[in-house]
Amino acid sequence: MNDNSALWSNFDLGQPSYTTPLTPHSEAVATAQGGANQTTDVQFLTARPPVNCWTAMVSNSTIQVSLSKDRGNSLVTLKAGLTVNFLAQAQGQYTVTANGEIVDEGDIYKLDGTVLGIFTSVAKSGSIKRLT
Image (tube, rainbow, N blue to C red; front, side, top):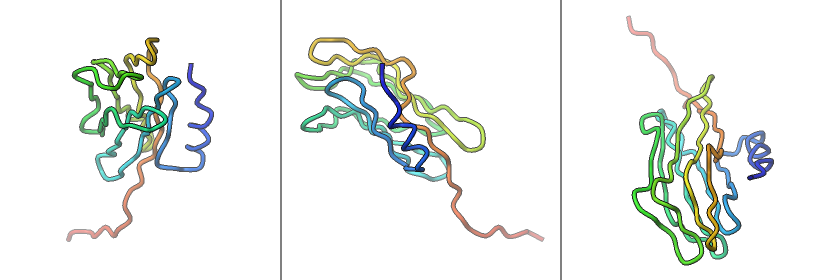
């Protein structure tokens, strides 16, 4: 399965974007956009040269997005039903995961709750005024 050691070290550094290898020729890039909805874009890319096969956007108001039809090229195909999930955690953290299948050079790779990123919401600074 995936070695997520790079993912965890990126989290420790507080980086808002994670690259996760999914198959020998594909990866996902999850990027937090910030804001109150904790919007996060996930690009599913083929490797060398990188081609974006699909971009999913999840947030605390859209917690699950699924691919409606197969997408890809002759090397990598994301199968219909591939799902990206937004999982709220405690203290403003959230995790983005994926479930589904990717075909890479004819071999099927199953994603079963594969972690694509762990993020912390950052509240925008500003003043709070008391209404009297």
